[in-house]
Image 1: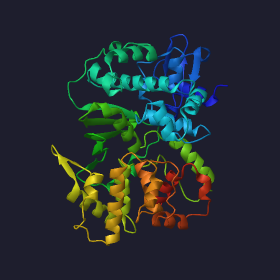
Image 2: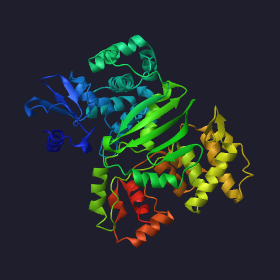
Image 3: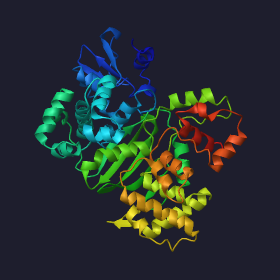
Image 4: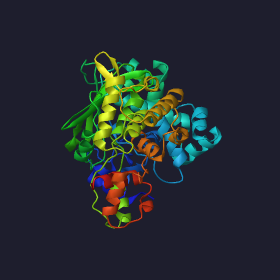
Length: 450
């Protein structure tokens, strides 16, 4: 049975539903976002799909006007399909593509993973990976001046021939057919990253301003940017908030475009672009019993990596935000790496090799920094942060802070945080456990009360 909300959302072009479902029009053979500006099709000619790949698999081609590849994503939060959604998310993030490796990372058999994908998404892991690669390539074709050959490799294909064949099969259109407009020859990539409103930029801006670490980060009234490293690539991005268009205009400099997709996905995570704040706030409102007023459109301000988040958390233990900011700034000044005029957050190897003589703090705190850095240097891809609890000087608050801001997990309540405790004490009584699975947003809502 078709979701009645989808019908109303399509007819009203409700931006809050952008990316949550797709509209296929039988008479044109095209599938669109619910906000497509084209004339609204008659309901009898419309089929709804939860996923873009489902519409493509049914033989529909993507709309060139509203561009389904540019819709906001959907975070994996709820339901019994959590494992399947986590697998889909890992492919989306370009972390793992091989079915055997992906299954091992999830702690399940490859046979069970294939069954989950077929059950929840109606296609195989390989088919979804190819669709995802082509969807990303389509975005690059229509928004950048990158040559098609470079786009093929940036999208994860090993050959241009394989790219052309897969693109035509998955999207029912040839890559060259989309390259109709002339693009700038500027080597800097500029992409549009949309979100579902409301998006409270002022709240995010205010939070980041108090914790900004120059010169690796910068902030203007309408933009946030930073330098980054991702595996073996480096670069910088600047994200400009365009309120009336419901998107960020993001400029990216990167020295290896083969890492472009995971870098873009991490930018989306840092800015929390895929959150459905309408759903989240409705859930929180239902369970806090009017204990305090909710801030509309609140997002989770992410930190680029779990290592950086962990270091910031260790330096923030039992001190004020200002004191923690000063310590992190000092660390960057002393240990940061510089290349071609850009300054980067220090690597785990560099931090592990420092004696922290420039810090005036207890040796136990320095040891905690060293232990964390050494662990991350040895295990660079370990994403189970509970492993950090085996390290001396690393406790639950530090781990949860890194989960909250370094991984953007949606259900982390920092109940050991002094600010959270203060806000809870000032609010009317409510049961925070009932706010799952959005207690990370509850944490930031409570901080907003201070």
